Length: 288
Image (cartoon, rainbow, N blue to C red; front, side):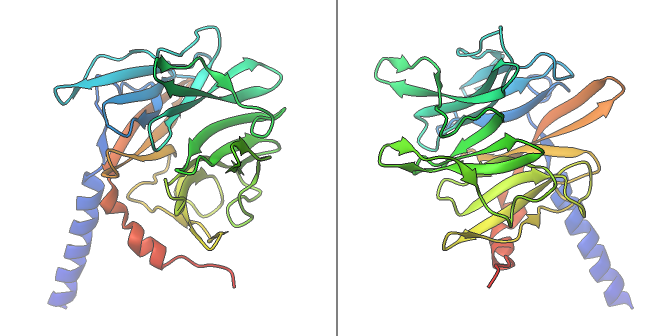
């Protein structure tokens, strides 16, 4: 009986230790109850995030640069246009492309834009063609090393699509997999650089709260049944906007809760090793 009590104490202590590893990212400087959706450059010297002002009426992308190992006071991102809502910044794995979304046509919702790094600096924003963008709202795009783009398309609900980059151009976007997309909402896909796994949020039944973060692994072109990232990440409120940065060291995500007419939302992070991705990969169940 004594050994059982000791074992239970060890388990509880371990869980509490893991949960304690989650930290609010740069409280007071960046996380001030009105932000979500961070992206950090591969060299860890530049970041982008969404300033939401407690709602969804005004959405702007801000940026910050790291100097002497400290993030500086954020300013409006160099590509943000105040005339339109801007959301969901993302860096390509090589750091040569920034993806983001802007809503310039209320009938279409959001479209996906890219900015490319050139010898003279960053290019002007480029609206991706109809191989990626559609008459529906297309948003939260992330890119793999081979430049495939994974993103969300909102039709009757949210589903995750992929547009593959082949022979120098993007192919018509298609849903990623029936094992990932369900009748529930699936959104905010973070694709690992080598496309080994996809992390996204879903409000499917069986989760811990409003929306939870899930992971699906790919093997031989097949995505496995998604696994919930668990109670160390997911809570009774909504988790969204996943991403792994800082040379793979940290897993970042956002949380949002509605209090009255206002959203309270911040950016959080936890060491990636706490997710036990290798164990989750070993538990991955693939259809025969």
